[in-house]
Length: 477
Image (tube, rainbow, N blue to C red; front, side, top):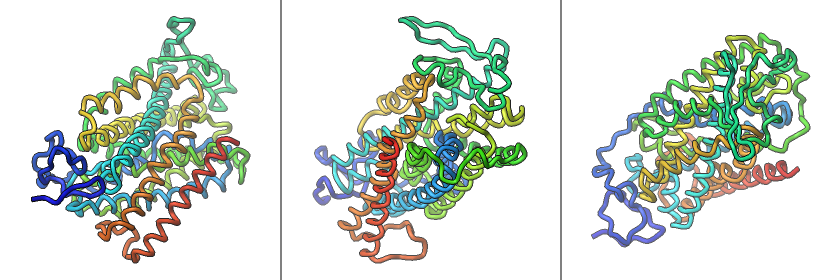
């Protein structure tokens, strides 16, 4: 006979569960995992790093050059370093906490993000993190869809007839076109030859052909699972490394102009919010732990991914800011304006499709897994929220500055909670209430005492809250 279950007691998943026992049901609720002990992960180290790095190089990465120019070199680099270290420890603590679920030291059971909170804290925390998790990834997904659609429209604008869009005006749709050859030489040189540019269509609702093509390519992939997407993530990771270095070489050959940036900047308003969005790797940790091969070291995969992400931020963000004056919020739109040669345009398009575009199905899969992981809703309903809702609404943000606003406030409200505060708060709660050590070496070979763990977690939590307060002050100022 199994021990009685309450709202704050972790279970061994797979044991018989009565109808009135809410916690620990996992996927057994829907009967989708009849024999969880037979599950074997298939994602190796390369796939693991690919998923993590691709989570670190989402749509907010395209905003980094403009952040460098507005906020200055020193504040931006210090913020990236600080959040990189903080994000790494948050991810490792989250992984270690999941390993403390009874019977899950080797991650044989599927414990999604919000499910971990139900095991250790209760249903209210479970529902709250569901809402924040959905908000966090949906913001990332919306921004990714818009950025990818903009770049596809940039390609179409070079073709005969130009890019096509349908603009909502006075109760009806009006077909409009935009062609790159209509741009002045000054606009091309400044990287401002951008289809349906911000400032002209701020108050318009545009449904573009680039958006429809983007949906045709990536929406079907969003309906697949994480294992099926892993091969695409590996391909995207390889493309990311190759093209990032190509970008760095292009920037260097174009000439680095230090007058494009300042040391301290003059606008720090959305700096924290946008950079926060770059460190959302923890959202992929729970699903990845279940699907990774047992021999893949969690500590190695997470720390190496953070280091790679940091280097890429400096290469693409820093050098891009030094090369392109008055760069647009979507860096790729400026790079494809015609000012930097055909090769850069082609590589920008590939970067967009393989890096930003492939992030769309990854975000959709992670959202769906979190919704279905404990039987909160069926896969059909989860797909409505995780896939069809973002695709049905992202086009409303196309014509204005919505993505920058989304990254700024979305990073503060949702990403800060899901990526920083919630994992650290859960880890601190579990350290106080649970004597299990966990199987992830959060601090490498160093094993701190329980008291030292508590102190360190309080410091990390205080640092997270402090950075969020700074971000809020910046947005209002």
